[in-house]
Amino acid sequence: MNMTKMNPIRSAVRAVRVFAGSTAHLALVAGVSCALLAAPVSAQNVQRGAELSKPCAACHGPDGNSIAPNFPRLAGQHEDYLVYSLRSYRNGARKNAIMSGQIGNLTEQDFRDLSAFYARQKGPLSVIRQ
Ligand code: HEC
Image (cartoon, rainbow, N blue to C red; front, side, top):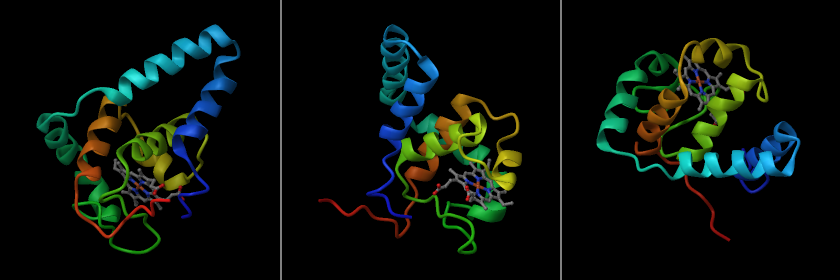
């Protein structure tokens, strides 16, 4: 995947804009999303994410280093990108039959804890700084 072409924050803001429909609403929604992203992550969140990740291990590996190339590697991925991806499966912006089935009853907090866990696992993903 080419990360230079796909900026999750920018796409998220675009999605929020479409969703919000009014400038005042946009400011409110954007403010709330920033607050959520900025919330400090504790060891407890990571631990909870590790627990929640057990069913995901079948495809993404126990630490997010996926077992086959058709399952994206999650270890060491950007935390906000992981949260964004999970939300996208939930709201239908990203459609995938396997993943839509996987997120089931997971909550927004579950998304954040899972992402906190995977983002902190070691893997070969890297970002090319420009
Ligand atoms: C049965 C196999 C399977 C299981 C179990 C599974 N996934 Fe996935 N996951 C996939 C596949 C396939 C994709 C790629 C889908 C696509 O193209 O959008 C994916 C994509 C993702 C992505 C997007 C990654 C990226 O780089 O864009 C995230 C995040 C993710 N999964 C998290 C999870 C979490 C969290 C769980 C457990 C709650 C889970 N997955 C369980 C198969 C699985």
